[in-house]
Amino acid sequence: MPEFESVQRKLLQYGKLTEYVFKPSDVRDIWASSRVKDELVKFFQELYKPASQYEQEKVEYNKINILSEYQLYNLTFCKNELMLDDFKTAAVLDIMWKLLEFDPDRGSRALLKSHVPS
Image (cartoon, helix red, strand yellow):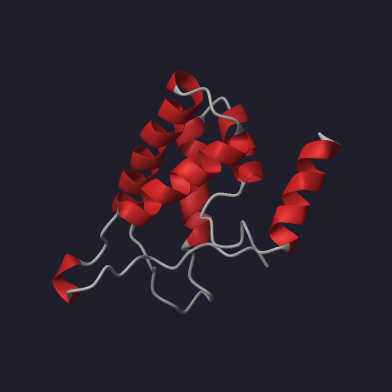
């Protein structure tokens, strides 16, 4: 898969994938797992883990579980029904992620902080 990594690296270099919650390599690794839901839960736990042990949890486990289920259905639809590759799947997952309204009482579409690779 060196070609895949090369294309992804170029897209990251030009800032095309930096705002995606899931990079194509994340999609590939999660989809390749025998326990996709567990991988999604781990992904979101890592994404929203506190910066230190003294910080409070950013997102409680039940909400992470709901987000994982939501993206599991989206991922399954992209891969099994639409038969998309990892790049297109990452784009669709990002669109579905941005459709979520996390805090409707604030009067704006306050999204959870996007995952930006370091």
